[in-house]
Image (cartoon, rainbow, N blue to C red; front, top):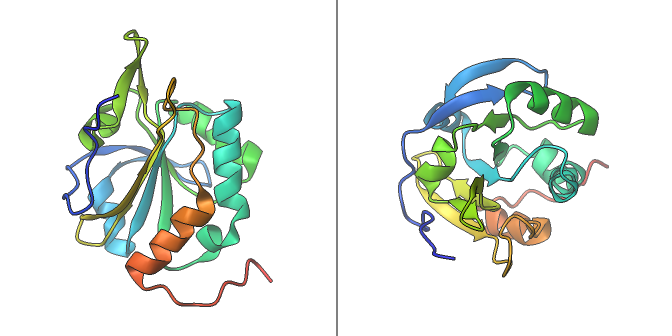
Length: 176
């Protein structure tokens, strides 16, 4: 698999999509608009309700630092539509908004779209830490030999990378 994904130090493209909030509201939103509130950890995944995607989002939800911290906002991106995102967020009790990228334009802008066996377009499972200026400060890309949607992001490793790059030194309370 080629590595056309944005690299650390690259500026993000001007992309937008329908963003579904944890409350179920969907609004057309530019990614850059989210940066006004601080850094974003943008996480691409394949589809709502697939077993490994459930594992990924439950990991972020259960790693309370991402859910309750003020240092970074976690935002998902997948090909699933707005209605399915609403059900996915509600079913898993997620506190993160998710972009609906049905045409994969956001994925393409980040260089993480690809074709499974040369046929079906998908997003490569990946995470990008984007600072308030719109610059990639960290990235994680799936490296699974057969299907790059199969790896699940290493949440603890990503947490440490976020803390290091954002100089986030608050103590971990994990909800206690």
